[in-house]
Image (cartoon, rainbow, N blue to C red; front, top):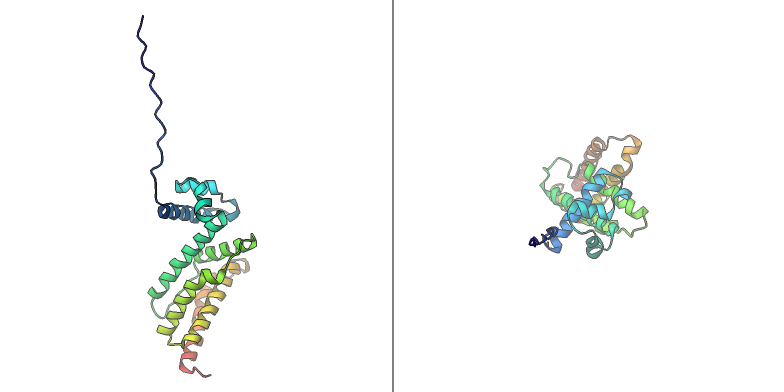
Length: 196
């Protein structure tokens, strides 16, 4: 009687190596950021984000609460990156240039709001306003209250341009520079004549 060969077991699929929550969140945010730059926000799904991030898509709900909360985290991360760069910009040049990244984060916040997600824009953009305020105090020599008011105006005007400027045929980057130069003139006048 011929001896039976032992049946070889199929190799078990490799399991993903465990990652920390911080690493998983970082990957999911990076994947979501990449995907929303490639297609409309509404077409980006949680499974697709998880697949690109190589993280189980269920963690989007566990760690963030859902897709909209993850997209809010994407916006927040982009805002922090923008705010971090403000002090590094050379004096005499725009601290914020209306780049596609800035326009994208503003449109994302508008989309989240239109989707009914409670977006506290003020808390999200506070890091940029704080960085701009510090810049106006240090470089333009404005009083703190004037500096903060000007920072708020600059951020909101720039946000409006970035959100709908392209629909009006406005060259957002050039118009942003023009607006900066005009506002800088106003800031200088305020610094020279604070009681005016």
